[in-house]
Image (cartoon, rainbow, N blue to C red; front, side, top):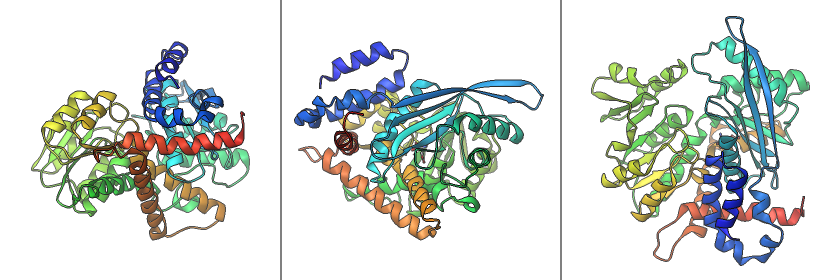
Length: 445
Ligand code: 2IT
């Protein structure tokens, strides 16, 4: 494989899709040696076939707002790679959603789902709909209109969407209600469902919990105890919430957390009722963290800045792609950061990753660190198929085991001669090998 040549060809075809090209480039660079070591891959054009989605659906979503005015958005579903199981991956509602974002997410999802060891292919979907400031009725009508189109392309054995940015339990509920009505069946066609209608315990917390389990394994490779370590998180959605809860439970102290308006620094630690308040702010659909500092004296709100300027031992990007750049990485390194666990998808820019690796900071990519979310979605699918509900403990034990196994796989393929673990390489190679060998077994299809 000639990485530069493949990238040139892809760039010529998809020049307006920078996030997608970024995600592909990172993977190709990591796998080039194992790829070239097996001539069967080249003969079957595995890479050329893997970088293109199996298929992409786009559709118009028309709905009526509270003023009685018609609104139009674009909906998408990208079925990226189905070699190892039904397409699986979230739905994102955010004004920034376009094909580049969804193709990067679907591509990453393919490797992430492979790492979980569960039988799930990669997919992603969403819309440029902006949920901010919308009433509950508007959210419901939009979700129903979105599903009115999407339902033709999905199914419990073909493609199983879930939530992502802007899509939580409420949106999954409205979409599931419409799917059930159209398909006339109650099945595991979506994950992240409510507990009363087929959901799994721990799913809401799973991405954050799994992320912190993974970070704990990273620290243990250096005999470092997470207890007493300071943590910063970006984002105050479900993911940051789960991460803050678990980090606190394991004895770490979350001192900074952020929203789009800036970040809050709280030396006493963001735990207990403070985490609940964060959730309340999020649920109020305001996208702001500023009121936190007013409510909890001793904490400080820093407007318009990201939390990466705060001195911490562990940094956890939990918001969105490319949210931590080279300058942010330099600031964290200068302040002695020990470990950076990407819980958002592609949260760090290539410059930031390079800086962490050069400084030998423990760094692991989203497709490994945040895989606990989709893994628990996989466990929800298993429970739906079995028509059983597992207890919290049963789900948590499985989630922990999956995260440990992903860590073992990253070490296996990412450990360098000097002992430093290149988790980017490890995750990409481990994720790639399973999908690639499945594609070889299945023939050119
Ligand atoms: O990025 C992700 O892994 C998710 N948004 C969760 C996907 C899923 O199917 O649970």
